[in-house]
Image 1: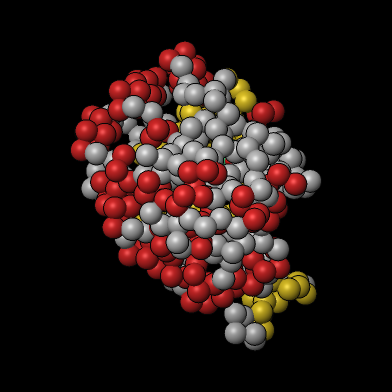
Image 2 (image 1 turned 30 degrees about the vertical axis):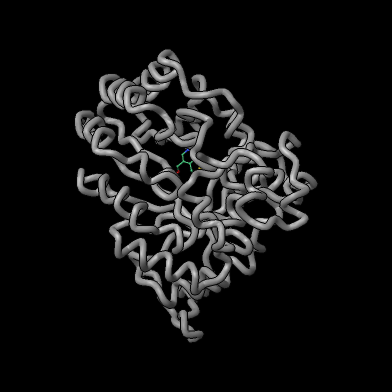
Length: 343
Ligand SMILES: *Cc1c(COP(=O)(O)O)cnc(C)c1O
Ligand code: SF4
């Protein structure tokens, strides 16, 4: 049985004062929900910190509940069209475990439930009618909290109405509830594999999350020919050191999951204690780049507040331009000049 209250949690682990003092229902708070799979790993500090709530969530005065201003870009119910060539459909607000760093707290766990038939059809029509949209992210919440039958309806509707749109299947369930990924579920996905491809978008934040079961769940997608990409959130006390993230990236790559983004924490109310200073993030990014292959290196990215959008954070190597000459620093600390072609 999943854990849904501090009382149940206190029977399983010795809670700190800060964890005991957390109160549900405060501004910026998410429900408490921890799957059996995650509950069995709470002795690992990096897991505990991501799933066990604590008092700083209740007192955080920084940030807001919708820093991406997604509400302003909602074009049909639950369809956020923020970037001209791709859109995000919030399939459901539910997850198998709630991550304390969740950036979509305005919506996640809000008891709105799964999208209706009409909402799904409306979103697919919008994507089909806007030829500039090449990709739709099926996200939430976690789309795999839907029943097999509802997932079948969702995929079938998008494939019928906008077959040329690439669908990103965004899920944390492979990490937090791998038993969801049954043969029956994969049969439904296989049946709806026509037109544009699927991409699996996972969220693994720490190497300990890559359990044998989680890897097997991802493999189910890869065996269907679906490429897997991972998004990691940079989190204080979880993965804010280069060695942890280098190990994570190497293990992801080994399991055929491409490290895609490393996100700076969004300015979401209730998550300040989990955010990492950007200067530290840049230093981690620099060390990762020295140790990882290009294939293993995620893009360190910040989603700017007030709906500013995503931009890449990386060490700047272009230091000046003198006439035709661009002056660069090398990763080892040297200098090189690259001249523009003579016109
Ligand atoms: C991040 C995001 C996307 C996808 O952006 P990519 O950079 O292509 O991964 C799409 N829509 C919204 C609203 C997003 O926040
Ligand atoms: S799985 Fe995703 S949507 Fe759900 S709580 Fe975690 S970060 Fe938020």
